[in-house]
Each structure stands twice: as C-alpha cells, then as structure tokens.
Length: 353
Ligand SMILES: NC(=O)c1ccc[n+]([C@@H]2O[C@H](COP(=O)([O-])OP(=O)(O)OC[C@H]3O[C@@H](n4cnc5c(N)ncnc54)[C@H](O)[C@@H]3O)[C@@H](O)[C@H]2O)c1
Image (tube, rainbow, N blue to C red; front, side, top):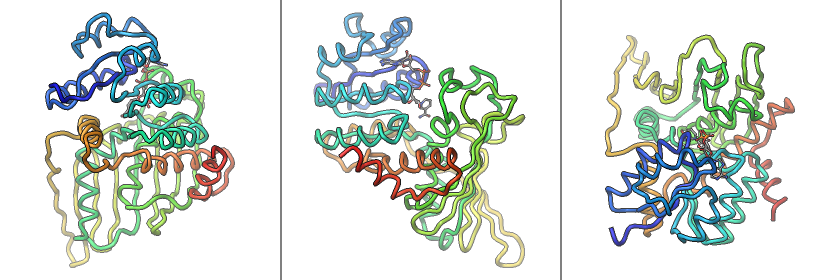
C-alpha cells in the first residue's frame, strides 16, 4: 500500500455514499489509493464514512480547507452539489491536488470555463465522473456502433423518463435548482450522445417546461434535437414528472439507427434488428463483461492516469464539450433559439481569459 496515492473525499452524504461503499474501497483493494480524510459540512454523516473508509476521528472534517491543508493529498474527490464544485476545486488548485469530480463540472457555463482555465493553468489533472456513459449497457452499445459492422450511424433516439414529481423522490436539492432536468439528469445523456455519435455537438434546439403537478421549482421535462459535428442527429426525451417510469437511471432507452441495422437498447436489453434481407432479423446481444463499470472503473482509470497511464475518456478537456452542450441546451430552452454549441463555448471561454 506504500505506493498508493492519498486522497480526500469531499461530500459523503447523498451520492457520496456510493463513493464510500462502491468506489473508494475498491481503489484500496487494488492498492491504488488510500483515504487520508473525509469532509462534509454536515457532521452527522461523517461517522458512517469514517467506518466505511477506515478513518479515525482526527481524519474527519467539516471544512475542506482544513482537511486539505492538514493532509496534503495527491487528489481530491468532489461529491458535493454542483453549485459548490468551484469553491472546492479552487482549494484543490491552491494546494496542487488533482481532481476527480462528480458531474457537471459546475452549475453554470461561466463557472465551468473558470474551472477549466484554473485547472489547466495549474497543470493539474481533472476528470469528471459521467457515470452512465460508462455503464455496461451503454458501453456495449457504443462499442457495437463503433465496430463498423452495422455501417454508418445516421441518427440516435434517447429517452430517460421517470415518476419522481414529489419532493424527495429524487435528491432534495434538485427540487430547488433551476433547470433540474438538464443540469442533474440530461447532462449524462448529453455525454452518451457524444459518445455514440463519436463527435461533439454542433447545434442544439431544446424545449423544457414544468407541469403543474410537479414539485420541482425548475423545469423537469424536456424534448430536444441535437445536431452533432459529424452530421449525426439526436432526438431526446427527458422527464421527471411523468405518470410512468419507462426508462429510469440505468434503464434508459437508446436507439442507434445505422446504415445496415437498428441497434435498440431498452431497459438493459440490446437488440440488433434489420429488415434489409426481407424477413426481420432480430438478435439479442449479451452485454460486454469487465471487472468494473461506472465510477469504480472511472476512479481506477483516473488513478492510473495520475500514475502515468494514458488519459481516461472523461478528462476535463473532453468534458468541457459536454458542459458546452448542457449549457447551450439551457440557453436554447430559455430563449427558444437554436444554439451553435462551439461558438457558445468559445464566447464563454474568451470571457474568462
Ligand atoms: N454520477 C451520478 O450518477 C450521480 C448521481 C447522484 C449525484 N451525482 C452528483 O454528485 C454530487 C453530489 O450530489 P448528491 O446527490 O450527493 O447531493 P446531496 O445534497 O445528497 O449530498 C451532498 C453532500 O455534500 C455535502 N456538502 C455540501 N456542500 C459541501 C461543502 N462545501 N463541503 C463539504 N461538503 C459539502 C452535503 O452536506 C451532503 O452531505 C453532484 O455533483 C451530483 O450531480 C452524480
């Protein structure tokens, strides 16, 4: 364990529990990294994390600065709500720590661009855990689409619809923030679109709204069209206040219309269909297998990167294009305009030069 990197886990309530039980213990078992502190502004959640991570009382903090100052970790893991990401990342930059952060980079395009500049200027490494793109079912679909066996990709249809209209059915803070669907939900699906298409977005036209029966303050339903830079089109439906959960987290619907076959992923079943030979050919494909998926896999790739391996696919350099699509979609939803995504990113990046 002597060569293991040292980290501080920031945010251990909510999704931090996934980190403390599924992600971080695995890094320890692999001998890749060991915790030196856990931080949460809510002291009530610290004892559980202490037990899960094997930390003693003097390694628990309610203040991220004190934790980083006293333990000087190699990297920090950031699992606090998006509006707090920048303040934590600023601290990591100040103390020269690499960063593995939960999505989205931040809660505004301005903050995302500031973070991008600060991390790059400091010469630090940062990656963003876009969990769902790296799930077993989406990775199997992506690998199949990119295999070339089914010809060129024409367009993609995606759906993630859920019944969580009552406060608390999804994490509490999401009922109070603006654009909850896009910031906290569709951000994952934007990244999946980019992965399936193998390109960043060129233009987005998005419409969001909030039905009377929802307890969200911000818009929680949306439809959109995204045109990718390589000409692939994407149609997407996202909803949190429907009467039926058709495709919840981890069970989402993606259909990739390729030149020679339709690849349909629905509730973790992948089917490949074609009528081109006359009668319908339909083949159900087993999902790929590997040791770990989503955040446990991404954390391993991140530490390997810090140790000199190639960059993982979810670096800040990659993820800034996901943030650009996210906030361009929000701009489209607020204005009704079609947004040119690269121009939108350039404009905001220029403002923080
Ligand atoms: N990748 C995924 O699938 C996934 C799923 C859920 C949440 N998330 C992300 O995880 C992050 C946290 O979301 P959540 O659902 O856990 O939120 P949450 O509100 O349930 O929990 C956040 C925790 O952070 C603590 N906290 C807040 N500000 C802090 C600060 N400045 N310093 C230290 N601790 C602080 C809170 O006390 C709380 O315990 C968000 O970025 C969210 O988007 C990702």
